[in-house]
Length: 103
Image (cartoon, rainbow, N blue to C red; front, side, top):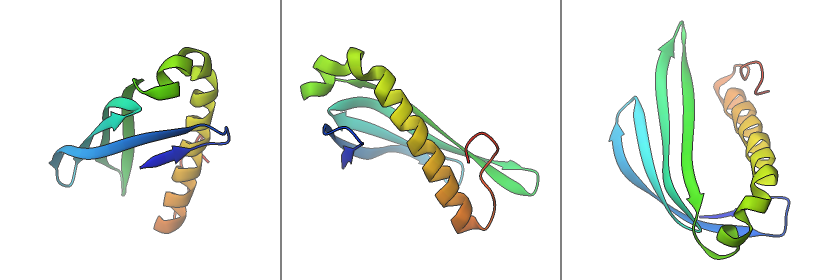
């Protein structure tokens, strides 16, 4: 997977499934310019389902390792925008609204 934001820089990341407990948890391992673990956790919430994503990675390759400390604030804002967009798109597919604070 190649990730590209608004900056002209790109990340190359390979995600592989590390473990899964259907229908509750999916854990993925990241390798490439970023290394670490990401996990989706689903839980019943009233008449619906809550979904949370944790992403614990560090920059280990190429420009990401060198510029990581300087780029961290920009990357954080980019990930925040991406999270909002994904939440809104997913809510649209499910015929509901994204939670307050993510829309």
